Image 1 (cartoon, helix red, strand yellow):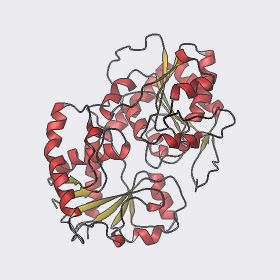
Image 2 (tube, helix red, strand yellow; image 1 turned 45 degrees about the vertical axis):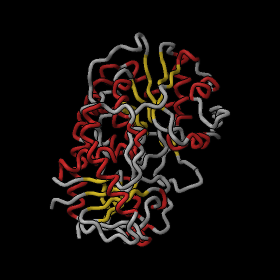
Image 3 (cartoon, rainbow, N blue to C red; image 1 turned 135 degrees about the vertical axis):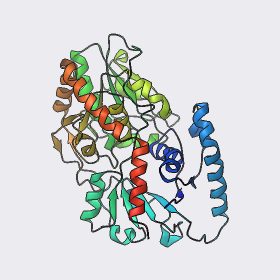
Image 4 (tube, rainbow, N blue to C red; image 1 turned 180 degrees about the vertical axis):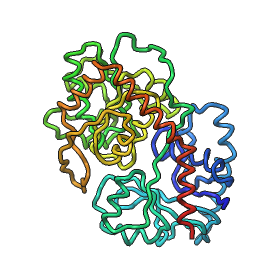
Length: 393
């Protein structure tokens, strides 16, 4: 069935949902033979710096999407759309307007795409009845939902763009350095506090080491959730309400010449940075998806260290990354079933292994890159299409 797709979140090159939306516009027509429409708010500044050929290919889908969004906004009670509809859901299955509250529906399947971290979902079964299927961003999310009694759920993992994220020769932009990469918005579940504590110990033994970070996000206030680790100095907001990763690193004893934050970069510029890295470190406490930044690092052939919990387990199943096995319980003001607190000593040991055994790091990275090639956006959106067909009414 050649069915159009309508999704109700935006497109951007600056955050995960936006990258997902951008690739739905690009690949849905290729896998289904029907158009895709973004009926969320389109913020053109989130596409700044896009190359002319990509911009040309997206021009008509964006224009048609905006027209569709305006049309639907002007309808008081829009009839079910002729095709598939995707709703964005997060913690407590909140996000998009549920169908029972007037959210848009499709004559094919109306699906909720969910990435969550809080495992307290009191109305999971009731809410799931609004949807033909709940599409979980990782196996852990699916398992949690099934444990709550939801049975109309399937895992569809996000993808990477192999035309951008692939192994390639370095430009040698950090000669003589051992570069450790850490990416993701600053927040408790991303565990950048553990990154700083572990890197501080590693860097004391390796003066050539440098921590390269991509920690900025549109939500700087979330960084304060990292405070409270007795082994790390708390992060402070600047006078204008932003964050200074460099100041936080320095406050935690990391010398200025061993730290570099790259600021906010659009998705398509990240690959060149990643290919300069010697190792990528993600001791995250929880991932409601499979961690898009980690996937892109692996795709570039970067040896990658991952915590063995939640959404990371799907990546570790490829055998293409180093595993942080020692995972302690996490106490937070939310449900943390399946979360994990990585052990600082094991993180340092993993960094030392990547530093000392370059051949093993390279071998494992090659496995990871090959696995991520199979998880291209084209392939994963093809799986999305097949799953929606299976749950069509």
